[in-house]
Length: 347
Image (cartoon, rainbow, N blue to C red):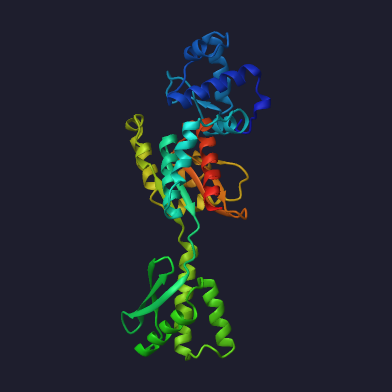
């Protein structure tokens, strides 16, 4: 029964189930009854353990990959273990320092976030990921470069020195003087404002007759600002570190799954959508295998947690991606600590 819970299991079944799961997560290999009888201290014979394991298999909590092999937890079993039986560990001082020191020193926040994610990846032996909301640029300079009679390249220079380009459609046969007029207005009247602020001021000044722009220039500026705002909202910033960690010693026996996962990591927009589900979580969120359609084929798990600014607003989500057999009890506190560390960084 897929909806079985811990309280419905006998003490013997819970002990056997816990032992199977913990040994499987440690070794990545199916666990046999003899192994359990020797390691667990259950004082049960291999035959008794096999009977319990058979019962757990009928409950869809364990599965045997081969007839003669031991048992391994199903995704349903892993979910039961994670939600009802797992005891999260504590990070060592060295592990905490390995993450925390990445935020030390001077440099842009994005660099510290990337470094912290890389440290998390190395400690967890998974791929580290972070999803941050793309910062709205503050206008410094603005220009248009004509590409054809119907298109121009809108060039935005931000206060931080970043330069971004967008292609905008032009009204028919717009003169070059209008392009220059629009660029001069933005640089002189809208400099120092965010995109939303710039759009609001443009609307206000047009409404009050203060814009001193003809209709074509007004329309051109509105098109450019709207294009940037729309793109800014739909382009998540994803940082992925440590994909090589997924190619561990067990990968050779499961290359198809690893190739599938590496391919999925290229779909950053899809991963960002998945991580959005963790933005409102009060604690670390765990997605196991086919619970999420994106990683259903690769059989992968995601552990993620949101981090916040000084006002308590969610800034982004940090986490790891790895095989379903990853050490949840060890990785969950790593992700939680990393999220808290990043919260201090951006506060």
